[in-house]
Image 1: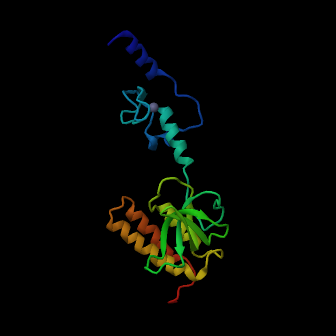
Image 2 (image 1 turned 90 degrees about the vertical axis):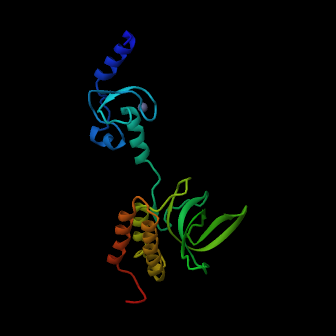
Image 3 (image 1 turned 135 degrees about the vertical axis):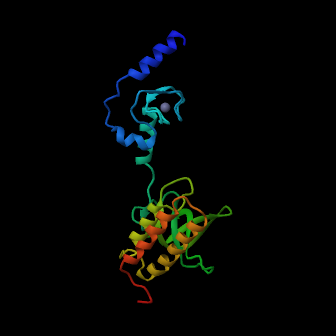
Length: 208
Ligand SMILES: [Zn+2]
């Protein structure tokens, strides 16, 4: 092994762990843990690094991944705080839906009340009337997640939401949870378990 590589390796392995605000235990899920092994290439930056044998990332890149995860867009329940100047993704209860698909994941611009959601339809604005169930300020189309289900459940008993719609949204949510199972969604059991918690919520159901 050429001397400079060996020196570099020694330097990397014995470099003290920087005293930053990040705990090793928090970085572990993001691909780095302390250890005396030399990783040849970090998943993100391709640099060599020291750490545990099973590390995928260097410590710096694991920190970046952790921060990106903490700062990720999150689902927000109801229409509170929804931006009205740019499109967001939302689960939207559509008053005009005649095809039995009561709630749809749409990208559009909401009004302040969350009752008009303007989507792009073949290059033209299409105003849909209904209610924002939950929304997320993300570019990429989100998929159903436990976090989304929790945001949906939070709106059901809320005064801000049309109380008559709760049971319709609940029925739709249970169908979506079944669909996640059928589709083999990797979080399907957790999504289904989260969706079933709607039964613990008190809101008007036409049948009780
Ligand atoms: Zn890296």
